Image (cartoon, rainbow, N blue to C red; front, side):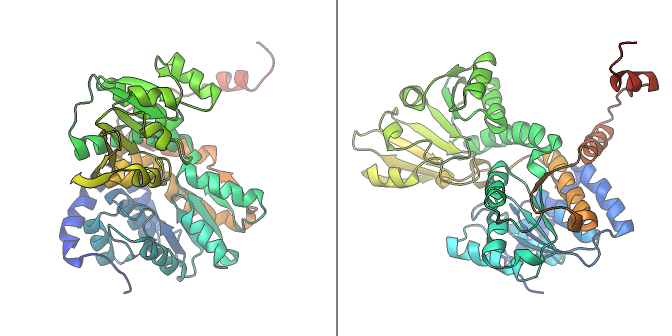
Length: 414
């Protein structure tokens, strides 16, 4: 079988990691049980660009159990867990991923999975979807899914320009994804990445969060929970107002730069922290990014303005500035939760990847009927995932009576 991983001998360790994730992903395992019996993905080729983690392994093995041939590339050059990649290759997944890929190797891996002639694409960030269109592969694809906010934005741009050739389900927009993965998952795992990289005390520090979308909200809440004094920066007046009402200080980045001890970007945009801001920062300021691409903190600016730089700890680069102050960039400005830590907890990825599996099944059944645009996850799929999660947690809820349902569907107050 074709594949390329860093070290196949790491497979036994990877199998243990996958086993741990499976024990904490009951919803996806329930779907796998059904897929194994029904084989709804028989003869379907799935090309995926996802973070190659133990949780992703549970997803791709579920797709394989459903009958699919799965071809896997990473969605970030530094997020692959090499032991997991080795185990997946043993499990019959054609995987092209290792930690520390060059940009050229990363692009090569995406190209390799597209060579399979996929019926379905699964993406995290939009790179695979864009490449499928650039290389003329898109016309034969039945449909795709997109995992993250940045990717949905890029694919909507393809749609707006009339370029998008197949329907893409925005898994990111499912309530059981963005209300949980983005808020609770990224919130916890971002703090985890900062702590693993630096081992600094969070309590008592000024913690600046750039962006108050679902990701920023989660990070701000977790930082406050650990005793930090949290500042939020925003460009959206409604989100800024939400942050104020949630009890956070809100100010422009130019002002926050003078105060902050730890800075985390979570906007999905570029040049959120530039030389202008870095020049105002305290000695010892820590910079981290939780957005998908490494463009939110201008690494180019840091390289140009620094008198010297050195890697002082794993995933920690020290930059000495002309004023003698030092700032510390974590994880090369890439996703700190995946580069310096393990990414989201399995329990929250359980819901995100359950949506992914069910979205692939939907595309197999109905993809040819859907127009080439960005589609939402159907409400019934979202509710099915939530119900399965509650069931796995031993939680029961009320149901509407016939009278209540009738009342809610009527304009009469009777």
